[in-house]
Length: 557
Image (cartoon, rainbow, N blue to C red):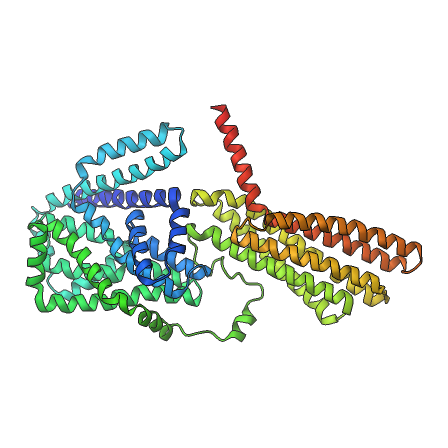
């Protein structure tokens, strides 16, 4: 009998967790990029950020998902630490929406949601309808699991030993510890409070201890963000600590209030909830969070500053020393979040592109000055670029197998092309370093005219590289026309310089050896411009290709 009850309870919990996961992931996939955009832009001050975090969490039904996303934004440099505080505080209120929905007891409608969601998901050809259907299916599974757990708890109530075990829980500190541990394991305060709500509805647990367990849930809910922050930058760790510090201080304040006036608190909640135990739990969860945010929001700056006591700044020399052959925004030591996976890849590619552009300039400088240290550094940086090429490519393969927001999926193919174009720019820098070595070893000279022409062409190449990298990093189309014009100009320049080179050879103004090097370098710089143009237009061309595919599919139907 006990075994069957435990299995039934586990099955209900499994359905509840899976339903919540399916619903949250489906919402993120359907509108993740748009929600992410709102989260990025509407966080200029803590109050505004708080409302954004509240709404965002209420929609995706997970404060953990919201706080982890915020931590990953801080890690990626898309959000400052001060901006992150508002959404984190708002997520604490938004997470209480789940328990409010559970308190309304929509279990009887679960089969309708489940059946309707599955039917439309399986048979609809409209992608938008299928996305909504997945959300509805998750909602149905969630409440089916609740119904299963509620039925099992109803049977448990008749078992005296179980009833006594629950009712023996009276120690406030034990309640806080229990709430903290359970929530840290499940990684969702919504789930723990929902289970608590069902127990209270069945009169299996006393309301006073429930208040303390809810407080423990607040602290346990920080586990996901803390685990995410461990792998991130120092600011990402600080963002996770904002969540923990806020919840610890808030819990301490509410604990004092409960200790001094538990009866008063329960009387107020009972009046608001019309004596319904489940609604008392849900309203307590919401009330505690709202009160905590109202009291602590004015002290956001102080909470942010407090994180620096636990995570101090790092020595710049150490950072520089470890920068070689390391990923900064992606990889095993950095937070992975599907919502920011593409953004993180773009940031790492931006860094790689900047290294390649700097190395090209270093190589051109070495070609003229024949500086041995510059030549050696070109080869060292090229090894780093090759390392980044392999690591970023592996990362792109990995995230291509993950459920990303729909608007991000189209960009993956473009990123594969971009990493290849950047790597080729790095190769051209190495070729120029080889030419510098050859000049040095064979004492090959360049005429003043050749040096001047190379300098002018390099200026144009630097301009197109700068515009292209910026256009790619910001997904900004405002510079694309200028990039196209520059690329055409560099093509014409390459032909003109090749003709001048032939004229100098014919007039015996330069040696065949220097002429060959000059010709190869001019050709290489023209190809760098081609790669730069590819980088600038990567997202634009991916979008155009996707639209063509969509039109072809639509025409078939």
